Length: 224
Image (cartoon, rainbow, N blue to C red; front, side, top):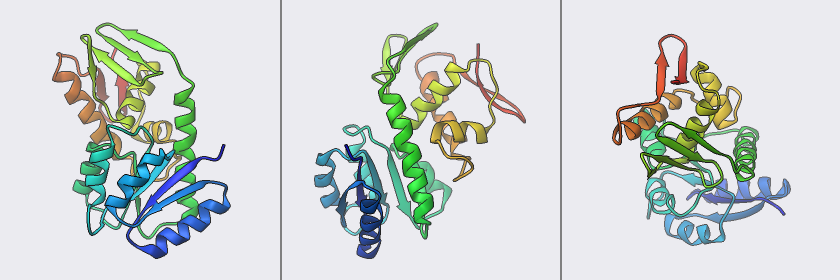
């Protein structure tokens, strides 16, 4: 069955161009040119969402906030903004990636394919792993800490999963970015730092262990 993409952008030329491009690649493509219309299209349960940040009625950040608790698919922001504060805000509300306009459609397709491959691998996993006060359920993608289920974004969960399954091994930001985002050298790997900061803060809000240790000058590891 064809995988589906929801493309949301108020620039009709971009929507039309991406619709033709991805349709020719065999994707089922849904489109919207405004935030309110996007909320309706989300009901079709796309496999991935491309979401413009700047829209006249409801901006992309608001759309993401409204749907993130109800959809598990990857969300990639399309934006001309490049401020770190915008990136941090997007990731904090559940975005999985950013693509800066103008962009290469070939690079965009590579990012989409990488995200969808990773989603497929997650969906066939059913392993449960125990680590002292924590239980991680890979099938439901839930982390339980001190018997409480914790709210992690998709990429936060993926980082936890990757580091926990490689406990004690130090990984630099570039490697974590490649393994978790599935993209080899494409994009801004500084987002790893922000994601790890948020993961630590969430664990510390319920206990005294941040779990992820910084090895200065080298990277990060899951602490034994």
